Amino acid sequence: MNDNDTAFEVRRPEPGDAPAIHALVAAHDVEVTGKPDWTLADIADTLAELDLARDSWVVVDGSRVAGWGHARRKGGSADVEIDVQAAHPWAAKWLWDAVLDRAGRLAREAGHPAARVDISLYAEDAVMRAAAGERGFAPATSFHRMRIDHDGARPLFLPGVTVEQGSPDAGEVLTAAHDVHQEAFAEHFGFQPQTFDAWADQMEASSANDWHQLMVARVHGEPAAMLLGTNHFVDDENCGYVRTLAVRPAFRGRGLGRLMLSRAFTADEERGRVGTILHVDSNNTTPALGLYLSAGMRPVLVIDVWRTTV
Image (cartoon, rainbow, N blue to C red; front, side):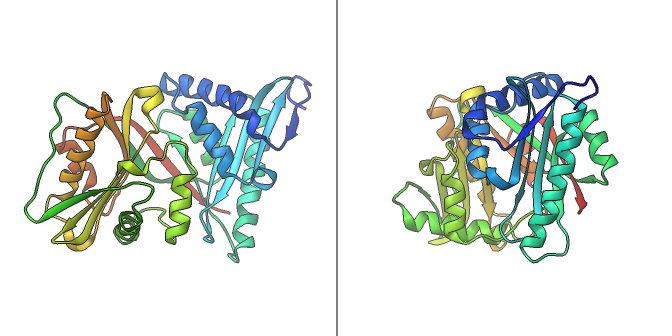
């Protein structure tokens, strides 16, 4: 029951709930940031990735979804990502309790005594930040959404460096990209190692994935850097998206990151996209934010990750 004695139904979500959940999330995005941030495809992809029978709930008020929450463990680790979206205080409280309880159980199921729980919050979202703080969360890091608008992007070149394009059949390029990513991101916030198959399956589970937008840079034949672009921001922003940019530690400081960005910018402009977007951890172990700023990108949104232990 809510404060007005109106009955809410709590149940597990179904794939067909995606439009109603999207309406809930989009309304929240507009209220906080001024425009929708999640697309319907983003919601559908998330529902497809979750164990809906165990890890997610919707709170329904008549024909309207008044709340949605879920918990998702990263592999077999103790790290669990949660989200709570609610249009009513009763739904918010119920979902917070449910996802935090599930987070702890997910960690214990994997053999860990406690869960390290993360939730991503817009910097402007005072209500959610207050709710997280009341439950013991504290800011852990911030991700900046960066954007560049294209007007004559040009690819860069470096002596001894070749760049290979990916494709669904380019197995050697995909495995090289995975190896670079795993080594380069080993010390980054929230990173959990993945086998090649788990990594590839995760990428292919997204409707925005396109292996043709994968690039691997080789220095005198040795894999040194990778960039994976996707279609996450095509429908709503007509922009390309750099999902991952990684340079192996031994090859940093040689301009490979800037080279890969230039290739992505050029390819996106050739596809008719007006710009390119990416996210960067402001506490990155490498000076990535400075690289993106110097490449002409600008920050357009800040998403903070808050963390607690359950």
